[in-house]
Image 1 (spheres, rainbow, N blue to C red):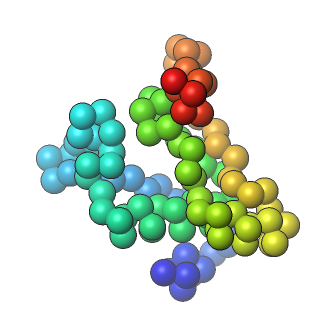
Image 2: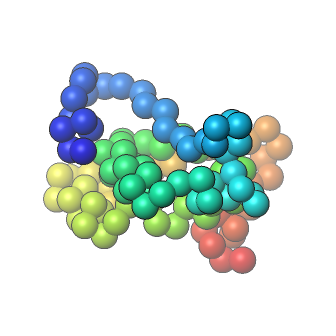
Image 3: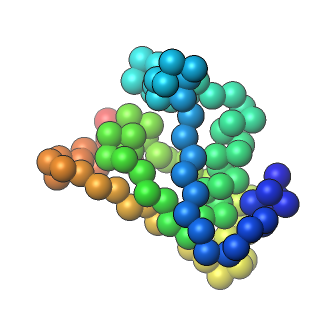
Length: 106
């Protein structure tokens, strides 16, 4: 997996998402029902390698992005002089992001 992440130019934009064969991005409002443990490991590896994450506002609320990377990935980021987790950027048309829900406080 590390070789796949390292391949290609250092500056790039990568889009990653999970979807069903009928193009649904969620089951009962969450993407977890569509992904496997391997999918989640790959997503965390991409997050750990990223300088910045662009995540939809509703995805942030529904998925409660608390565990972006594993503790080992976070430590590796810090050892490389990077922040422990990549910063998240989101866009919202209504400016109504429920920050407490995003952080898992509800």
